[in-house]
Image 1 (tube, each protein chain N blue to C red):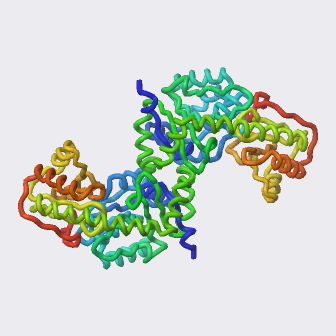
Image 2 (cartoon, chains in turn purple, brown):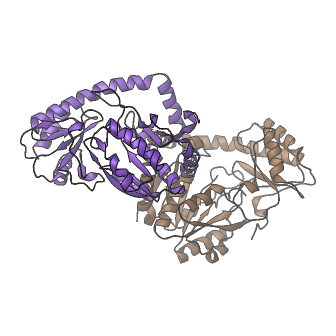
Image 3 (spheres, each protein chain N blue to C red):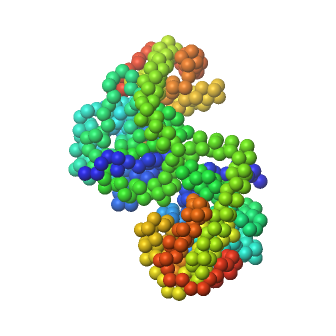
Length: 315
Length: 315
């Protein structure tokens, strides 16, 4: 048994860690890796750059379609079980169990991006998959959401079989992550400052989330709002036919920052969906921004749902 | 003409930059890259990892054997012209001219690791190759020697044709270098603190170098000491037959840190050579350390030379 502190590699944020893992997996013969559909464009590109073929596996209202992994003939899978990025869905308990069973049967590796796990508002925190199987799950965390992406500070807890090869990749990549941030973050943790910071920010972000939901209910009552239980953004499915890219372009030209489902790596046919962050704005600014955004969209009835109500995606 | 500030990419130290360049070169069809013989083991491995075949080209007393590059059929070359690592040789003026001519004729790229350029003790600074041809030379600098490797802060000035692809590689690598160090270093530069720091350290390191040379002359008079004009280490060629690896192992077991020529990537048949750093020790500690080291080596006559007296290597 390798102690967990000996299985940690510190990285410059999550995506560097993903690149290191992909190269280590390719180095031991892996050829295909599953990515969630939808997921960030960078993940698939980083996997491809490491020599792996990235394969889309759809997400539905209960998370990644774990039942499709065997047929996808992949050696590994990247997933965001605590708060799927960007849909906000939580991986259902039976799928967690099924995932672990498949990993063991296939000798495959899951890369668990513990995305937004720290910002969960209405339910208790979701446990890490990695706690269920330390030999088949890589746990990846980052301070990007809880402190700042500019720190470039992340970490991975690795299965023992991957420790040496990932350390080697990291050394060849950049000879290690900057030390000052690591020491400062260690102090921040030890003093209990991170816990205090998270408690304060959860309260603040929850208020902003509530303001965002209220503003959407008022200004875009026909839209379906999802992904509200955790994280720093909501997804807003627009009613009827709408051109999400054109709406986003027009909104950006007015200084409203937003993303759309089409900005993600997806082969699915999602209805037009806007992705709106709320972490960086006051409640007043959120209300006026949503009102301005709504003026660009034809509106009808209303529907705000929890992620569990997410319809099957491209599956 | 692209302004030079638009051709800079900030990296996590020099070796990450080398990896990015190698991948960008491989991406546009490069297949072979020349490394100096001797050079650090990591350079060749990083080039190979990026898909390039690393080819050794020997260094002699006037620097890299530029005349051998054409026959080596390489698309690029990595070199340390200001203070060859680890031999300490400066690339001769006519070789600089010949290198630029070859780069232009072959459409090749030179990666200039401006290693130890800041610590030159007895002569004026050597100008950067990159000043002679901005379209064919990548200039790479780092704060590792002038401040601390723990900062992981380096930069490259790129030929315009490589800017986009290297930026793309950097983004996929780690989404950018940590910002706090960059801002702090910019302030440090702007306030003139770096210049003050370098002036202070040059004086201090020169004293330590002089103490190292004097101690070697006293305790190892038969050794040939080279690479003394710049940098933070000297090379010590041992007289007659000696097992450098065994001497180094014995010295390390007594707490004396050192390297040997065999620790570098070389196919050359160098005489047994120790590589001794002097930057981190007081003059008194240097003297006693050299005395202790000398007790492990049979000694004879003496010879301390400038790098220009370096004999041809494996050429």
